[in-house]
Image (cartoon, rainbow, N blue to C red; front, side, top):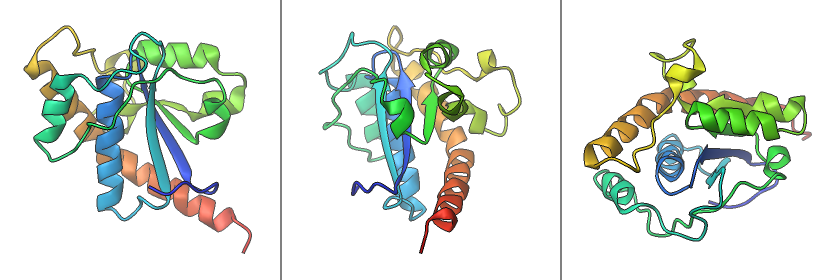
Length: 177
């Protein structure tokens, strides 16, 4: 993906940036590519903690992504940086703890307005309490838990892509010609 100052920037956020948020990042990136939006949108991920910083994606997450031909070997976990509130257009929390952490860390209302639960874009979850929209940490589980995370992210992707498409369209209409 090419980096341009006018690209719409999305970041997915979980605890350690080795399971849920990199899965969401790579799945969203692939969905945007399929929709022809990859040159207009940049997607990355981070963790609310530095516990796993510098480490690769969890092998179980990599296995689940590989089932759909998504490569994850280049992922390196990293911790959230405060300036990303300003630099990202959409901040996607993977569960309520991440949402709360991001909300407390947000420096202003503009930053707060960028934070959404990823599953709020799933039509079956939209409008539900944020507590119900969370994706449980699969780290303590097995392959079935990573499959569940994949499915929860997958069902949110069409609504998320639609939201991003509308935001990109609005941004391009607001750009001076």
